[in-house]
Image 1 (cartoon, rainbow, N blue to C red):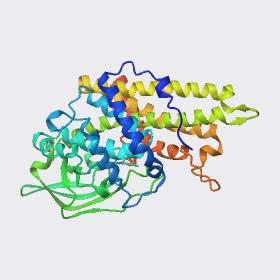
Image 2: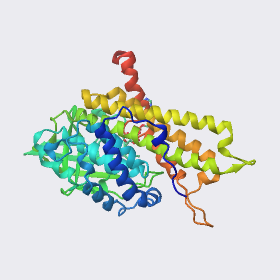
Image 3: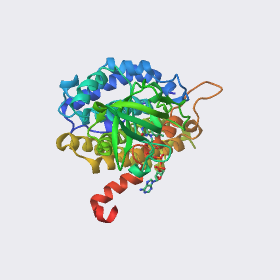
Image 4: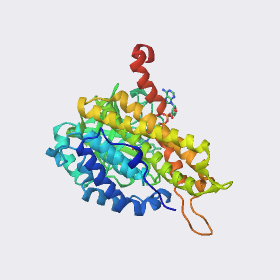
Length: 406
Ligand SMILES: Cc1cc2nc3c(=O)[nH]c(=O)nc-3n(C[C@H](O)[C@H](O)[C@H](O)COP(=O)(O)OP(=O)(O)OC[C@H]3O[C@@H](n4cnc5c(N)ncnc54)[C@H](O)[C@@H]3O)c2cc1C
């Protein structure tokens, strides 16, 4: 069974968006309709394996110029006036069909790795960002470890970089690293004494080993794996930002990523909403469509309102960032609201569709249904790129002050 009418086109008014962003939405929607939609089901339901990295889609996204959207013209980007707003709009359009693709191939590649390089200093920015924009390498961003992820304090972190002639030697293990099974380069946050340094390493360097991909509840097209470093050499000129300034560099990219997770959440909520709204209008119980019951009318009116608010919030966070260079609080709010919305709407959409919400495909007819994968994919949004409790902590800091909240 296919997705149905796109209610966002009639329920949501893009009145505040600049013409530039509206054009990006049209362009990416066309790409998503033509290229992502035909393979979305396969991406959303095929469990992880070492060879399931979506190389063809990665190349198609690069060929369509999607990786140019977040960046300035001097590195081969589009040079948009509101690049962050365009980027999160793009994420919503891709994630409407394939959330894990949007998360891995755009949030991971273009935001976490790309924006890290964008602020890495002139040498790394000019050397690597034009290549990333052209889709010439796959990158990973590694802060998490088996024993440390939310809490990235130096004393918690076991991946260590020690000084050597002309550079650094990295030893330790990073966990959950998106795209690492296919990556050419990796940004690695390392403990360096009492502080941390972010290093850009070549995945072909001797001493790096990548495990098989993790088998997860959802986001199958987002391949994650352990990356083990055994005295891996990184030259001095591959320090991202400044020595001992690594945490700040990593958190800067993650702040942008969080707006993206908000946008991906909105996309999942919208896809679940659109499918179930169509289904409820047709499916009859007690002689009436399910949508004729006021219970469901009210619930879906509430969901439509929540989607409207969440979309406005991620757009506003991005616009604030484009205008001021900082939107930490709004990014945290957008992430919490978008990710929780996706889980809530997907759960209710499944309830309204009954067994047809719960099933992936029918054994008898082969008919296929989309809600179970949206529900599985939605949950991780509440956890990764900073658990939602931590995002609430960020917001609380701005209410009560660091002295009280810590
Ligand atoms: C699909 C996927 C992709 C990922 N990609 C990457 C990647 O590319 N690079 C990377 O470095 N990492 C990546 N991660 C790791 C991800 O960012 C972490 O899983 C996340 O940061 C949470 O860390 P943790 O799982 O170790 O949980 P923990 O840090 O152990 O936290 C567990 C739970 O404790 C609670 N908690 C934590 N702090 C607080 C607090 N202050 N107050 C109240 N409750 C709290 C939260 O509910 C949290 O979910 C990925 C994970 C997944 C599943």
